[in-house]
Length: 249
Image 1 (tube, rainbow, N blue to C red):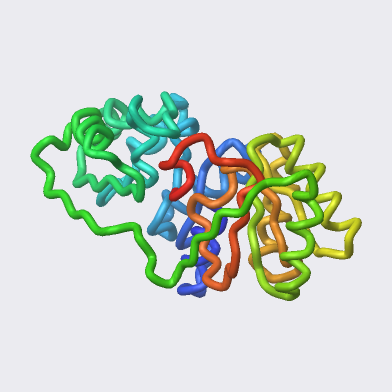
Image 2: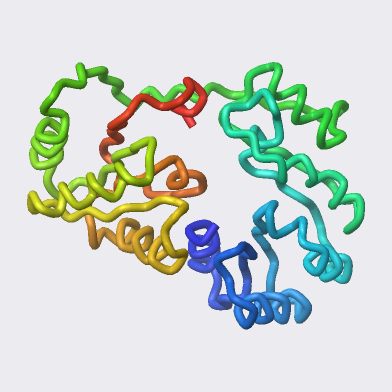
C-alpha cells in the first residue's frame, strides 16, 4: 500500500491526495488520514480488509462521499484461491453498510472457479469481465537443481549480476532472515522482508530496495503485491512456491 500511495503522491504537490489505512498506522497517523479525507484533500484511499472490518472505520467511511470501490488481489476472496483471506469475504457486506457504488475487482490469478466465486461473493454475477494473458514475453524462466550448495550457487549468481535489482523468495520467515544475513556476510547489499517484522523496519527495507540503496530483497510472499519497481532483473525462488498460482502471482 505504501508503495502505491508514494507513487500517487509523485503526481501531485499535495501529499494528502492519497492515503492508506492498515494496522501499521498509529492513532495520530490515522487521525491525520481521516482529517485529510474529510477536508476533501484525499482522492484515493487504500484500506486493508482487516482495517475495513473495524466498526470505527465503517462509521467514518459512511460520512465520506465515495465515487467507486476497487478490490485489488480479489483472488483472496475465494476459498478456492491459493491465498484465501477470510476478511476479504466481508467486503461486500461492509460496502452495503457504507453505501453502494460502482465496483471493480482485479486479480492476476483467477481460475474459472475462483472467478465465479469472486463474482458471487461480491454480488457481481452480471459484471462485464475483461481477461488478458499473464504471460510476459520479456521474461525468461529457468529451473535449476537444488543441490547441497544452494547458498553458494545463489551468491554466485547475484555477484554475476552485481548492481542489478533482484528478489529472493523463501517460504519461511526464519529462512528469510538467515539468508539475508548470509548475503550480507558475502558482501551483497541485501535486506529481509516478511510480515513478522516491525512495520517501520519493513517499510524502511522496502524503501531502501525501491530507492536502490540495496540490490536484493529476501522475502516471503508478503512482499510483492502492489510493489512497482520496473528494473527488477531477476527473481529467485529459494523454495518451491506452495502452488502454481502462488508462483505466477
